[in-house]
Length: 238
Image (cartoon, rainbow, N blue to C red; front, side):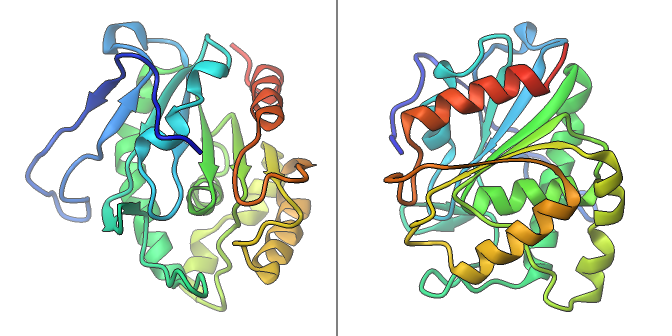
């Protein structure tokens, strides 16, 4: 991925007193349009990976269909040179499902604050951002037009009853939300057991389009960006 972004991006950062059950502040967001240009457009929420930042995925937003509004969101927790959505052991990629669930709840507060301005909401997540995107989808299966997951994984509840109840996979299977999953079969970062779980979950819960990109490693290649654009145009109407 690259650190370069589109010319003159719009960055919103609002700070407020924390209501009970909500995050301490609204996230930093880079937008592809000014606020007055967003009304009625389909929104794509871009969620970066572990230790990265909001301008990473935003660097290729200008290569995706122009009719969409793109909003790249910064994760809330500082991690190395960037940020993370929830605590993660970078050596083993170990995490707690309850931490992921808490991060999803906090991100929902922001999504709910902007979704009314748009005709639909689609999620695009890379690596840990894919874990966030799939968890958002599983928590409210009918709220998204489509989801794109890149080089990442879906959260395994790991026997945690609260997270198992939080995820409505039965409702998601009924909704058949279009889901694009792009990855390299030789990805050196995502553990095989995470991929196996994600594959099993996706086959039973979403309308899956899965594409393998040899040589991508733990990254995104130009052909993948082209395919994402085609998927957005085909899957998201209006």
